[in-house]
Amino acid sequence: MAGTPAPEDAYTAEPFVAQGGSLAALREAAAGCRGCPLHRAATQTVFGTGPAPARLMLVGEQPGDQEDRQGKPFVGPAGKLLDRALAQAGLDPAQAYVTNAVKHFKFTRAEPRKRRIHKAPSLREATACGPWLAAELALVEPELIVVLGATAGKALLGSSFRVNQVRGTVLEEEIHGRPERLVPTVHPSAVLRADDREQAYEGLVADLKVAVSALGPLK
Ligand code: URA
Ligand code: SF4
Image (tube, rainbow, N blue to C red; front, side, top):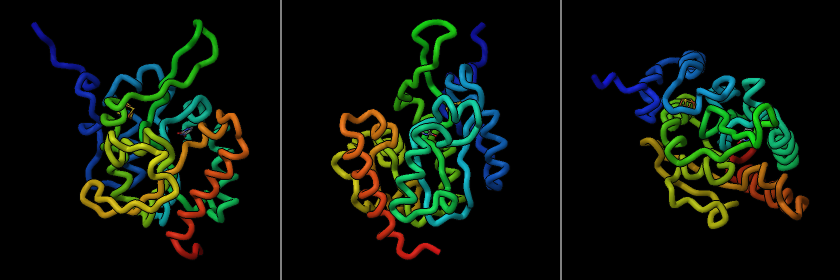
């Protein structure tokens, strides 16, 4: 007899998302998400952190090794670089709500027991995880979203998103029925991997300054 399909076969977080709840309730529900297979190998769900509502929301790709261990977004090397760039652009990271398009760490290992190597999430996984991002957006109600890299861009704006075509500009799009303003930029990990890191870093800061001007004075 064909059994009931496992929830992860459906590739959607939808059945796990608590409707109409608080951010705390949402975070608790996300801890038990099995909406796609990524929860199996990862340590824990890494949900967004920060105030809600918040004027600014930052959306990354997925947790990395450190984030997977600590359960918080952007606490590893990419997060350190991002915090530095935000401060330089005049943004206090503590005032922003920070999250990722995908809430579980996807990785491979070159050999058993060796270091875990980041693997980009597929569009299918990012789409499965989308209901969490939509629920966060509804509660955070940001005035501006900073989109960090291609995965976040595709998750929010569709698969035709190309970061280099729109980075450092203010986009106005309807997302899940709400008009949103977004400033896309490169992912901080791409800065860490760039041949010319300094130039890539300055590019990130310049894009973040566009976000600061679009937001107006921050208190
Ligand atoms: N990269 C991301 O996109 N998110 C994190 O939380 C850490 C690294
Ligand atoms: Fe659920 Fe997202 Fe984790 Fe997949 S990656 S199990 S959809 S929280």
